[in-house]
Image 1 (cartoon, rainbow, N blue to C red):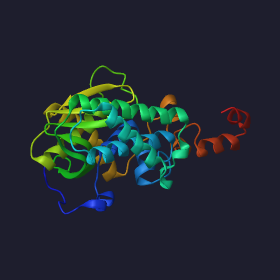
Image 2: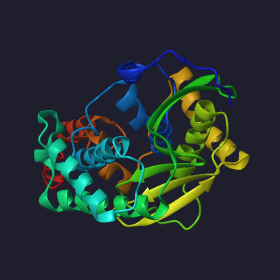
Image 3: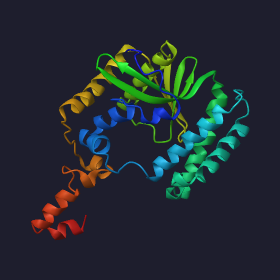
Length: 280
């Protein structure tokens, strides 16, 4: 890895910073290159604006705002949880939050997640270097730049808050390795040392999974990132359709490989198979 990056990028300029890869980009490309193309290259509407992303954003921002303004003494779980929930409710009132998309059940999940975040912060009582730390750095092996935000940087660890489900597999999840390894590079760029651990804190379920900052994980990430960079350079984004994957994809209506895409449905209608598609 290299520490070459634009050190003059500050404040709101981070939102528009040019970069080749990120953890979310590599993970989406791994899941399906066509999904990546429709999302990032063609900028079609899909993932944004659903109730899960709204809830996740509110939880992350509530934690960021409260912890940034905190005095660093994480000793009272109840007090911290009250502050987090108050911030969550205040953020809900902002007109651009689309909070109306959240069901009551999902809103309660978000509030429960904040209880768990408060519990974890008090239990660990971390010595924090930074909150929501942006980092842009070059990956020499790929000749590509990476950008991302680290939720919590302690003196020797990175924490990433997760509001989704814990991965089913007992081993190291590819998504966690990709994200954790890119965070490893970001931490090194920002602080000049490698973290000891990257912790994924699944605050909805109260579980914590960790990966080590080591060469094996870095190389495993590079394999996936290299495939993305190759696609970016040759313009080839093959679809990886499957029944379960396409069903949950936000871009299935645009993808010719999906049986329920606009293109496929129109072809079936043109071929006279109207009854089939009325049942979909």
